Image 1 (cartoon, rainbow, N blue to C red):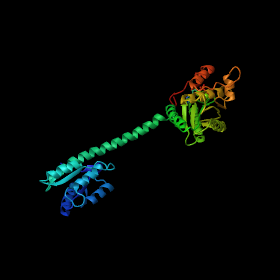
Image 2 (cartoon, protein in one colour):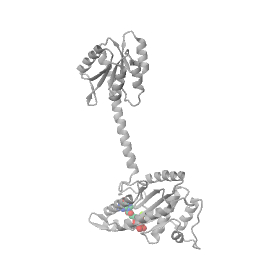
Image 3 (tube, rainbow, N blue to C red):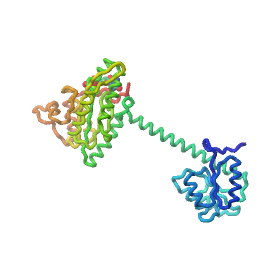
Image 4 (cartoon, helix red, strand yellow):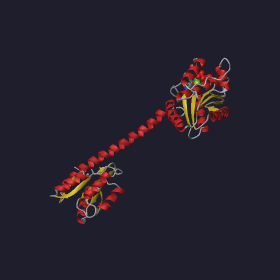
Length: 368
Ligand code: GH3
Ligand code: MG
Ligand code: MG
């Protein structure tokens, strides 16, 4: 039966370590006749350097050598975490039980006694390379799995239509980014935006035109955002921008810039062009009504609602005079600034009433 000398698509590489030149020659001739690739070292130092530079698939290691002996070479190879699994077969003298025990203790995988019988050598090399082959396959599969996991993670975080972060990923990032801002006592702004009269794009030009508008809208947001901002699709035609290190004033200025960019943009789709605007709600931390990230989303959403109600194509800041006036405190005074965001949010919800229609498509699969 022909010997299987291959590891993957190349012959296995065997390093012979022995201080006796004639032993090396003998082993090298035989192993190469079988089809292996070989290299050799005459002492432990050279062997360790060669193994480090270009790890072989197997080492045939003599125990008795000057300077560093075989046992020490085996120990260092097995301790070196940077190296792959390299089977080591120790060559010991026939009567040296102590050597065998020391060698195996040091991490050698097998031993063969001198003078070497070639039939036994072949069988032991075969057996060790079978293990090496399994190890190589396992490593390749592990790498494939890790790659697939990375891809899966990316897909699970991405909105399929626009390529932006999806809602789940946005919420995760918001949690992390907001926590971070609070820890460093740095301001944080959140912009929520929704395309105006988007339904009529679908109704007039078809769903594909609607998708084209969503993609281009996403690109405008990306182009205006900084590297450290996070842009995501929150639902249907509603998007969120997370702006770390940004005070509310600057968040409003940013939203105004995006609003103008959208207004100036001519959306293209197969068969035509169209214009659209968008409305924006901006909230920020620190603010008495914002004690956790859900409140930040809620207050930006409330501000967006007011922007829609008061004419669209505009930016409304949470708790601004316009916001408060619209929320309609009977005496025209500002909305209550409570330290309990839930109370504030609930109060607003009651005043704003149920306005689920704007959010009806939240979480709908892209292009559905
Ligand atoms: P408003 O100015 O008040 O925001 O009105 P609107 O028409 O933009 O809002 P409305 O909530 O009434 O309509 C949103 C529409 O967005 C309805 C829904 O079919 C559409 N939509 C949601 N997701 C997608 C999508 O992935 N692709 C397309 N083409 N349309 C979508
Ligand atoms: Mg809309
Ligand atoms: Mg909407």
